[in-house]
Length: 125
Image (cartoon, rainbow, N blue to C red; front, side, top):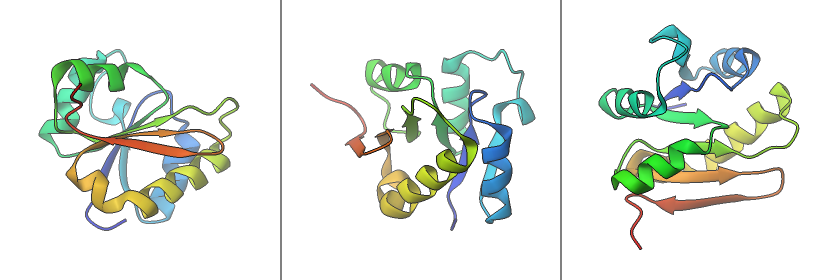
C-alpha cells in the first residue's frame, strides 16, 4: 500500500493485520511496539511521531484529535456491528484505496457497513 504505514489498535483482529500484511501493507499492532495497556493519547502521539495511520474501533481517538486540534495522525474509525476479520479487511482496503491522498494529508474516517465519511484535520467548529 504505497508509502502509507498503519498502526492497528488492540481491538482490531490479528487476523485482519495478517491479511493486510499478506497484501503488502506496512502495518503493526499496538502490542508490537508498546504495552497493550498504553493509553489512547500515548498511542495517538506515537502514531503522529512515526507517521502512522491508526485503524481502530475505539471512538476515543476521534475525540482526542478534535479536542487537541491535531492535524495528524489520520484515523480510520470502524463502526461495524459484527466485525468479522475478512469483512473488516475488505472495508479497510476499500477506504485506503479510495482516500489514499486524503489519509496522507490528515483525516478522520468513519466507516460502517454501508458508508464511508471523513473530515479533514484539524477539526474546527
